Amino acid sequence: MRPAEMDETVFMRRALALAFRSCGHTRPNPPVGAVVVKGGRILGEGRHVRCGADHAEVAAMKSATRRGFSLRGSTVYVTLEPCSRPGRVGACCDALAAAGVGRVVWAVPDPNPKNASRAARILRRAGIDTDCWARSRDSGRRACAEAARGLIAPFAKHVATAMPFVTVKLAMSLDGRICDEKGNARWVSSAAARRATGRLRERVDVIMVGAGTVRHDDPSLLSHGRRNDDLFRAVVTRSGRLPPDAQIFTDAARERTLVFKVGGEGLRGVMRRLGELGFMHVLCEGGLELARSLAAEGLVDEWIAVIAPKVIGHGPIGSAVSVEKVTILPDEGAIAGGFASELPGLLSEGESDILRNQQ
Image (tube, rainbow, N blue to C red; front, top):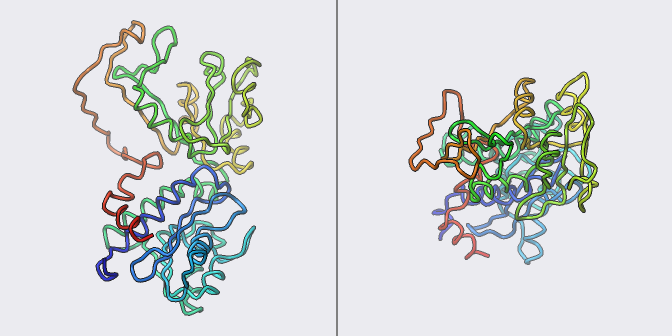
């Protein structure tokens, strides 16, 4: 495909897909992806894999040079505005200028006031063209910018408030039950739904539950599928009574279990402490009282409701009545998707083929 015919969003969508893989591993930094392109061909790609490692732009440029490509006159597509001040590693703007790239395109500006809106001025001074898609009138570019904002939502909140982004996930039946009358919740939702929501554990920093969930269900609170050794478990309790033989205290990941006794500051104090520890995204999976309390204190940023097409009623969960056709209408103000979405359509099958054939 000739460069003139190539839709630039293909490259940004690839960068977004790379950044998506880093969610849950980069705290206190944001997940970022980047690709280096010249003549409509991807020369290199990279992502920020963890704090202290190369930033995405540098990783992508190193990828290109390892393959023998010159960076002169290339375009770098990156999901977030390049940093302009050195931190644990050097400033990306300096690295881009030194490499002699011709153009840098980013999806959204950096919400960190230390870097926000500085990159364009610094790069242009070095003779590099720049473009930010945050206010683009093009629908494809706007979609990329929205996806990029979703990816860094936990980082943006942490930078602005020093508090983590909080997602509540609850599975419930059509009649609003999260368990049967004996407290059995296995299983309200289907295996497919559990796999889909379970993948969220691979992309968050902390999974939080209440003490009752630990006492009743003895959950592992580990990620399903792809292993996440950066994931912490947090238990909140008022009484401090927790079973010492619970999985979260005895398994191989027990050193990544945190216990918080709720005090005078309530759950806000717990979240403030998690923020101080550098955690950016907390997923609350149970129970209902904890979810209600988080909402009551104004701490919930996103609520994932898994609605199972069944009615539990007053019987055991195994006798729940299935309903074949269910229509769910979001109420006014509800937004479908959010951080928890799989960013559908990041790469269509055709776009994947284009990228694969270029490498």
